[in-house]
Structures are given as C-alpha cells and as structure tokens.
Image (cartoon, rainbow, N blue to C red; front, side, top):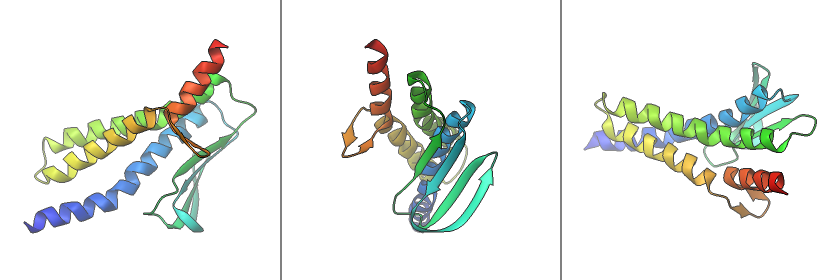
Length: 153
C-alpha cells in the first residue's frame, strides 16, 4: 500500500516537468520559426535560477509547483501559419510525452505512476487543443482557431 503513496508523491513532483515540457514544445517551435527571442518561465514569484539553452532563455521562479508556466517569443510579426505552428507545438509535445509514459508503463513495475503521467499529458494536450478564452488567457486551440479564421477572411 505504501508504494501507492510514493507513486502519488512522485506524480505531483513530476507534473511540473510535464507542463514545462509542454511549454518547451512552444519554445522549440518558435525557435524553429527563427524567433529573435524565446523564453520559458516556470513558476510564479521572484526568479531564483536562470540559464540559456540553445538560445532559449529559461527562468525558474520561486513557486514552481503552483502555476505560471509560459513560453514567449519575439520576432517581427509572425504570420498566421507561424502562430498556429507555435501554438500546436505544446499539445504535440504533451501527446508525445503521453505516448512515452504509456510505453514505459508497459515495462516497469511502478505502473500507476506512468499510467497517471500518461493520462495527465493526454489531458494537457487535448484540453489545450479545445478553443476557449478566459479573460486574457487563450488556449492553444483558441490561438489556432483565431489564426485559421483570419486566413479565411
């Protein structure tokens, strides 16, 4: 029974990594589209660690586990196709990570951990593809929908 407690604890320690991986999908898509500046911010509050990897700035803030995962990039105006490509990068990375955890789940004894991580990443990938907007925050699906609507006009 204690193994389930360990798996639950590990799940909550690994989910921020999964969310950061989703944001890395956006960042790498922006980098591929030759963005002038790409940044991933993880957490809220004051920054406590900063690094750069392949031209992508990575900032870790004090409260990593709460929320505040953002990938941002700057370039001369992106085309609608480029914005859609960058928006879909996050869900694609989440679904790839889900497939990875699902595959690992077949071979390791800590089955529930990888099963839950697989489901969590499917949830992140699918939910972000649904077009919705809450206040100023847009889902990736909303960004894609908005850009495709602009192409038809």
